[in-house]
Length: 393
Image 1 (cartoon, rainbow, N blue to C red):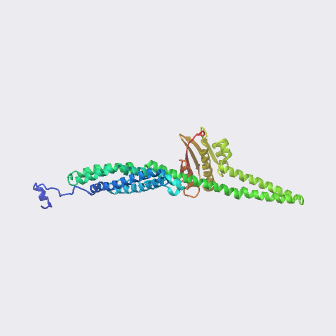
Image 2: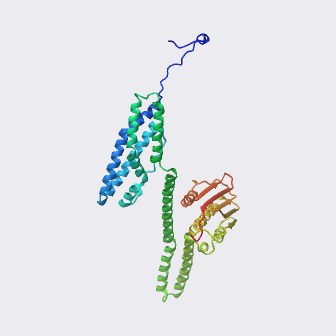
Image 3: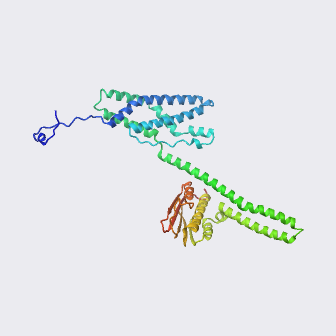
């Protein structure tokens, strides 16, 4: 029989059947292949899960039990990775890979062991492997039998069974998006806090060594020389004492500046309004400060807000070319908001080398936000947001 190739064949009223088409498409065959592979895969996974759990559990009374169980959980992670790859290839399930365990940053051997033992991804994979043996046997037998007996309805049957597999993969092998995101944020924030604290300690050490300590050493040497000349040349000794007195004043000023950089006394005693007004008075451009807070926030939040405004005003003095600036601080529900505005040349960026990136990282470490709006030609508006915590907490 030839297929119709002209309008005459349709005009004579003869109905032509459509060309034959195979009922099983590539997607259906992938689902069938996945269901048939369930048996060997689930048998291996079940044997692995039962073996490691029974062996590791029995040996926990010995020194090798917990390390063996930790290694078994790391191996289970790899089995879960293979299962997710099989689901992506044959079922089209897009399951993200979980965050790798930070074993390289886990500290000592015991900390790494504990990190592996409390890995939820490994435990969920073992659960997945342990409960799927009956399902693997059922799907293998059902699909294999249907290939010869129920082949007309096998595509629909395979789709239903594959959907159950999809739900299992998503339920047990898919990482919790919110939990994984939060873990990644906390790990990053912890690194930022550690790096910031180390940098601050190095700065304090450098300032003490190069500033006040050097002056005090010179002062001690000068007083020693003055002591030696006190009887021989009183006038020269008096001049040396006067010079030492000046060194003492400079050393005290440097120590006060260093203490202000660590945590200013005015912030502790009088709060943000007075502390920010003091910072604004040292800025090279006129600054209007408005602080509208019903109560004082927690000391840590107050300190971060102070140093944020302090560094932003330093940027205004050094880089903006502004004629005026303003600082506004207020509370909005459970957030502390800070906005620093100047009428300078603009063009400030987080990656511009003016310390903006460091400020953004510091605020991010405490669940804060940092937004820079600085078009070329100005004005520049920097908005910082911090979580509010009452001072009593």
